[in-house]
Amino acid sequence: MSQRPTTNGRTTGGSQNVSGLEEVLGCLRSARPELVRSWFQHLRLSSMTGGLVDISAPTAAQVRYLQAHCGPAFTEAAQAVTGRLVSVAFKTPEAQEPTSDMIGLGRWAAMDPAFTLDRFVAGPCNQLAYSTALAVAERPGEAFNPLFVYGTAGLGKTHLLQGIVQTAAGRLGDGQCLYVSCRTFVSDAIRAMEDGRGGELRGRYGTVALLALDDIHLLAERERSQEEFFHILNLLSASQRQVVMAADRVPSEVPGLQERLVSRISAGLVVALDAPCLETRMAIVRNKASLLAINLPEEVVRMVAERYERNIRRLAEALVRIDALSEFESGPITVELTNRAFEPGRPALTGKMG
Picture: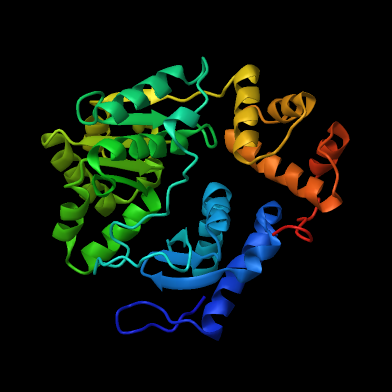
């Protein structure tokens, strides 16, 4: 994914652009074939600046699909191709370029518009986490600050964090509520320290009204990035600005996390997000099917919910796969079709998609 840099650090288009994206798509087809669509051939690498890779799609609907289902997979593929800690963002070609002169700073993958708090399906397993998230979104800086949500992969931590940001942004303004992955933060921190611009990093992250940092367990063993985040956390807390974090385990169990940072995080509320019960999972399946405009028979709803007990993200991926097979065969979604969609090793079905 070697791109030709311009004078401002951005990359140019042309054959190198296409070649670089083809490498990423090739990696994606090997690792996650169920996500690939035929219209991926129309994607373009808009820019590759520092730790951020911008990929543009022709339509807003395609961008929404990429944001909803493909962000982590594209990021992993881009990191495998480049060998660097990069993040991927999706946009339409007409989307406006940022004006910040610090590469990647303050820019993160666009949030999923479906990840709002009113679309989060609450049940006995996650009611406390949902209630505290709602309180924080409605009264940022006043209730449960900082808020730390933990749970295994795919249980809805990112949904909660992005839901908090999108709700609070209605009160405080988009520019004051920031959601960022830990990978992006680490990339920004490393670049800022290498350039001697640590003050700019703190000035950007430490002055927002609400900061949501996802996958904070990725700070493990990164002492310099932890140092920067500790100062940013103190800056925000001292001025009653809200901090929300998510990780796959409690702060004290993150290996290599500085004791003072563990203590500072734990001074707020630490709340678990547990695996949902069957009834809650079925409600989630119905909710996600509605968002994807997929008509599911109730027996299929139950099949999907029973298959994935501990990873809600897999529920959405399963629905996309089932819908793809249904469109490929021009047939209705049935129990028999769903069973075939679950067959191991089934190739990506992109012939009629897009």
